[in-house]
Image (cartoon, rainbow, N blue to C red; front, side, top):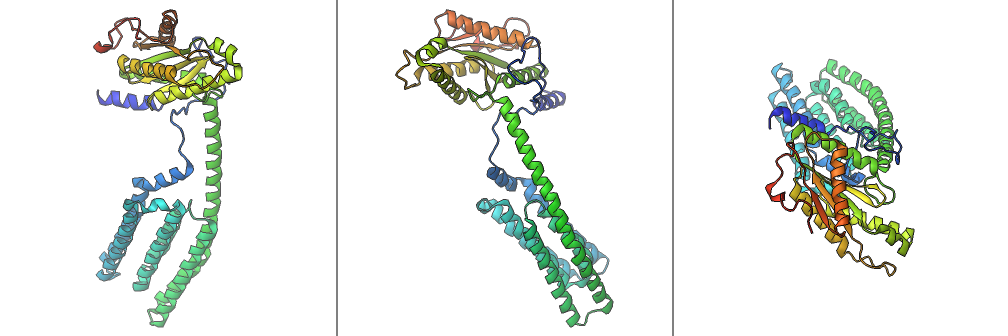
Length: 420
């Protein structure tokens, strides 16, 4: 597979194209709902997401890059003859201590005991303290102090509360004033002392204003996150079948179109199964519609547990469900369908009103390159009806016929009409 094919696969996996065709009319769903952001996997909890953010390499690399940037600034000062080499050594030592300390926490997993806000605060305080220490040792570095203080405060933009950020800001200003006082006591250069006072006035005016503006940005960011979460919840609800708890008709057909397109572009195998509950009308008559709904929910749960993570399981309508097997030849799909059948048959339904076992009839087939989604579905549906006619509670394979059958597995060339 060349680079073009890899690029096409990458784009196809992130693109969802689905039209309201005559083959699959979506009368059961609201057509205006957008499923272009369809995702088969469930969303992680907020707390887990925050912890994973700290585990991302980018989260650890950014502070290190900022430290190296400040070291480069110190080296530039040394190259210009403004500071002594000892100052560069101190800067390098402080960076080494900070980086080793926090990286040690990350790699030891100790950061997982704390919230994201609790981890960012010591980083901001530690970096600010290091900047002030270098300023104390070499007053001329105040030129770099102000911009890097703003960078450090920006690092904690979305995690530090406004009060916490203001407290850090006050601490920085107090520290700066104390260091300026120490420099005055040492009778430093008068022009440099005046420059320190001017810098302190500028910091005292700009830094709190910056923190307040950061708070506004943080508020807008959180509002955006809230709205985004609400939109995800709405989108997720529009994809989920309210009764069965699996993908609904619209979502499963969208997944079918997506996987069909991917198979056409890359040539990877694709299989689909139609699963139908046997004698569901009789079950409703014996148990009542409420208990019949519970049977549907339980079946859906068992079916979703039986398929793989990358497979798609959804309700097509009534007691009929679809299972889509991406990048899967016929034999593995057949084995999964048989696993579903066995689990449904052997499940203890624990209902005295239920007479006999709950079973399913399954039809499974493999996609033929270039065929329509309707033709693909019709072949799987025909196999399911063959299973019904053959006595139910069985899996029937409908072999794809034609030159585009994608070299079906020789192992899967067994019985052309049935698997029991």
